[in-house]
Length: 314
Image (cartoon, rainbow, N blue to C red; front, side):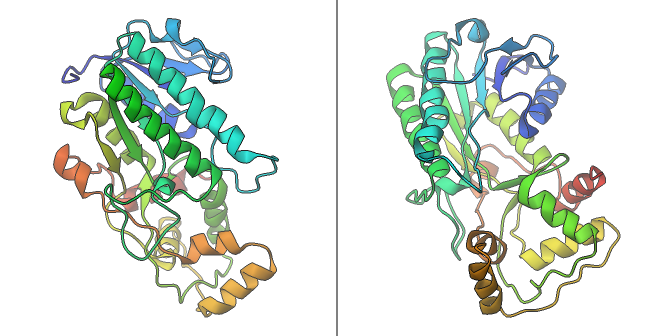
C-alpha cells in the first residue's frame, strides 16, 4: 500500500504528548493529516469528535483517509479510584477502538496502526520480552489494550483492513509527565537516590524514535499484520539512567547503595510497593523484529533523547 509518501492519515489523540509530535512528523514526511481532537485545538483540517466512545460517528473524519493512527486512550492511572476500573478502560481502549476500526474498514481505509503497550506482555521479568511471548497483561489498562488487539485481528480477518500493532515501553521526551518527570526533578534538585546497588535492565523509548516508527508503519508495505515491540536499543539499569539524566543536566548523580531488601521494605511501609518495583525490577524488550522486517533503526540515541528531554524542563 503505502509506498506513497502522500497518503491521507487520521491521527486520534492529536493533542497528546505523542500526538503532537506525531502530527509534526507526518506533516514533515508529506502526509495529508486529519487530527482528531476532543474539542477545537487549532490544527488545520482537524476533526472535532468529542469524547471517544463505542458509539462515536467517525464517518466524516474518515472520508478520504488511507490510514488511521490510533493513539487516543484512557491511560494508565497510578492512583485508580474508580469502582470498576476495567469497565472504564474497556469502554475507551477496547470498545471505542473497535468501533473506530470497523468504521475505518467500511470507509475504505487501508491501514490501521494501533498504539498498545508493552504491559500486554507483562509487568517485567529478567529475560527480554519478544513479540512471540504469551501475553500476560496484569492490570485493567493492559487487559483493555490486549482485548483491543484481539478484536483488531478479528476485524482484519473479516474486512481485509491492514492492522499494525506497536507495544512501546515507557516513552519519554519533551513534555513527559508522571514518574519520569518526578525522577528528573529529584535529580535536578540534587536529592540522593538510594538506588546505587540496583542491577536491573529497563527499556525506554524516546518520543522522536516512537513517532519515526509509527510513520514507518503507516508507509511500509511489510508492516501489515505485524505486532512490533520498540525501544531505543539496549536496556539500561536504573542507576545508569539516573547518571545519564544527571549528565545531561551537567550534574553528578547522588546514588547511595542501599540494599534492595531495605528499599522494598520501605516501599511496603509507605504503600509504594508498585513504584519501588518499577525502579528496581527489569522490563526490557528485544526490538529486533521491526529492525529486520522494516529495516528500522531509531534515529535518536538515548543520550540525544535525554538531552532534549532535560532541555525542555522549566
